[in-house]
Length: 138
Image (cartoon, rainbow, N blue to C red):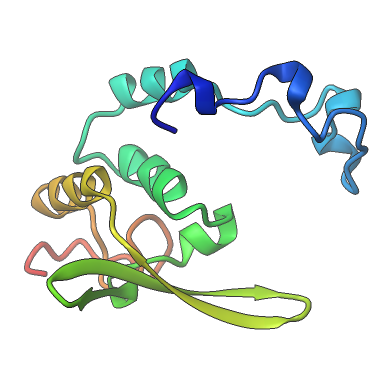
């Protein structure tokens, strides 16, 4: 969000009082706590552009994929749509499969270029996994 006025106050959070289906993730159980902008900035300071750790957080931040989907995300998902780089991903839920094409944010493009230059991008998946290749000729 571009301005502070677009951010909900904690008191305006519509999820307060809701219990998660997964107890470990619920606010009441003391489970997972969402990252703040400061947490994300500290992570990015620690892991500079061109590192696998930085690429993964940028994938998560710019695609909104779940961890499982992000781990399968790779170069085959990239495409060019009328002079604009985009990624295409199939979201699978209980009700079926939905395919979405999303333009790549300029900051994400910078991260992808840095990772490619550093040789951390695989052929099938961007980070981790046996499908990742150390080939930098992509």
